[in-house]
Amino acid sequence: MIKPISFKVVLITLQCVLSIALSAQHASKPKRVIFLIGDGMGLSQISGAMSTYTGQNAFLRFPFIGLSKTSSAKQYITDSGAGATAFSIGKKTYNHAIGVDADTVPLPTLFELAKQRKLSTGVVVTSSIQHATPASFYAHVGNRRLYDSISTFLLNGNCDIAIGGGADFIFNRKDKRDLSAELKASGFLVINDTILKDIAATKYIYLLAKDGMPTMQKGRGDYLKRAAEQAVKNLSTNKNGFMLMIEGSQIDWGGHENNYKYMASELYDFNETINVVLDMAAKDKEMLVVVTADHETGGLALNEHDDPLRFSPIYTTKDHSGVMVPVFAYGAGAQEFAGMYENTEIFNKLVKLLNLK
Ligand code: MG
Ligand code: ZN
Picture (cartoon, rainbow, N blue to C red):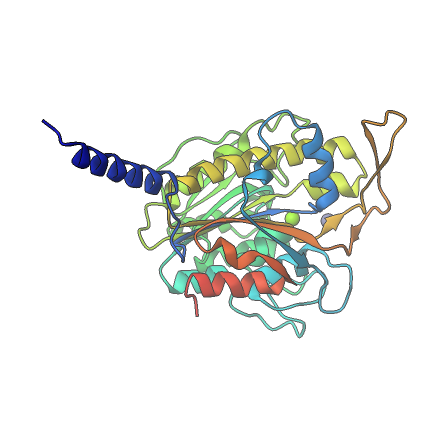
């Protein structure tokens, strides 16, 4: 027969086990980092799009939030080259720069530092894989428009996995160079297809469009979410860890067009991708998820509407604006991202958390 006292001890023990299980703590330092960039995604974009979204709002799931100051070295209003380069090399640079500092000096990117530590790296985007944001993580060129040149940096092997558009800059190059053959000789699987299929490789360039991917409005479907899952599956085979950059590239393109519905449909898609990534991070104590933007696009304001319960989206520019952008963090080391800081600090925080220097 169980004595009352020992029954109580069993209950307390059960309670302890249960509470520890429910609050599964993330490690203080991550092994796996998923860095999501919503290009042109300011607070107005998130506020507007999420207020009308009927699914789960991923942004509500982050315990730590910061603010990033986006100016580049020479201009208050950054472009995506300088914006992503601030994250990738930790230095403010001039607009249109890719992986080089303000004096056009190439500096090691997060991916290069991660590779030195034997981590795997990857980019998943809805633009071409040579577009300014992803290029800043593996290439070093003075001008973002040099797509053919940016492609050749993939040969260096600092980006293990790339999924997105950009087939033209590999297969249909101005210099007629057979970069596809060179990439294959360097150990890459090079795939040119219109739909993403499951693969088991750990080093590949998966090209799904000549240049940018189709818009959500033109039926891109759940590509970004599936590409994110595919990349994580392949990168996870490296027990040392990985760094994956996922970009909602076209949130920015909707902003440049001052097309609110285009922007919102892209942000909905990005939101769903963040949800999938957070679900993975919830089961992985050594995963860190950081979501931010390189800058805001369109100077979007949510102004009064005839219907007091609605808002009118008003754009104030066809270009980027200089407002700070939010940073959302979840998982191992996420608390480091609370506060207000320059965009270059995101590089420093990731370097510190992954012991990259
Ligand atoms: Mg971009
Ligand atoms: Zn832009």
